[in-house]
Amino acid sequence: MTIGKKSFICTVTIAVFLGSVSVGIISVYLKRIFFANKDFTTLFRNTERDERLSLHREGKKVEEICEEKGINLPIRSPKIVIIKSKNMLSLYEGNILIKSYSISLGLNPVDDKIKRGDCCTPEGEFYICQKRPWSQFGPRSMLISYPNIEDAERGLQEGLISRREHDEIVKAINRKKIPPQNTRLGSYLFIHGEGMEGNGKMDNWTLGCIAMFNEDIEELYEYVEVGTPIFILKN
Image 1: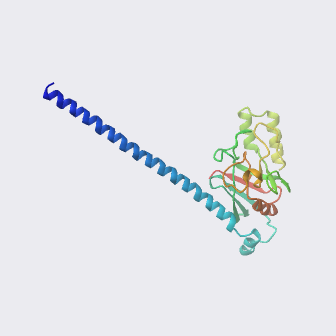
Image 2: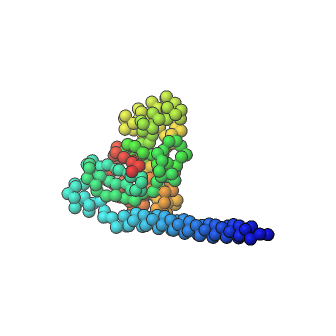
Image 3: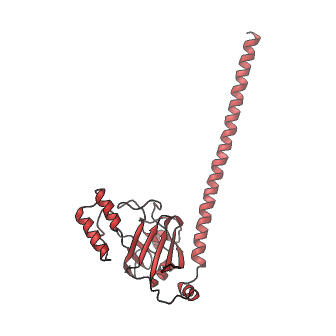
């Protein structure tokens, strides 16, 4: 073998070796980034959960807040605003914020509800259409007027409901009654307590309902009535 060939083989061998070393270094670096991000994500989620727990534990009672803000009881124009991205439900007197509560949403907390079984919490304008002094999930519950007219229009266009079902939903909503709860759009979405499934968790665990701590739903229940507007927003 000539010196030129030996030199060429040696150069290729060194290049392959250095390439392997580089790949190894890059691999280790990428793993560090991945696990660092994973740790950061976990830390962020734990911090967010702690903040929501803090909101629950340290909040003043509605009665105290109303006294401080000069709001007479009973609340004359209650309104509920839910921000899904913040897992937060807020009680208002007109446009005056009274108190915010931490909540849990459906297993799919991001998307709008489309049909039965999608485990999404709906978005839009609704109202409390029934109050129940008992619940499978905690001590109180309030039925949300889902589906609304927009849901009915979409469901009809997508072939999920019939014209008759659509018209029945529209009729019920216009009369501020309970809309039909037996269609493919989904049904029986409540604001309720923890139940055995929640049990103090701050994760999103419901089938589309809005879950609160038991003491929170008991407090909220006392200050709202059937017909109270509910605005459910994504952000």
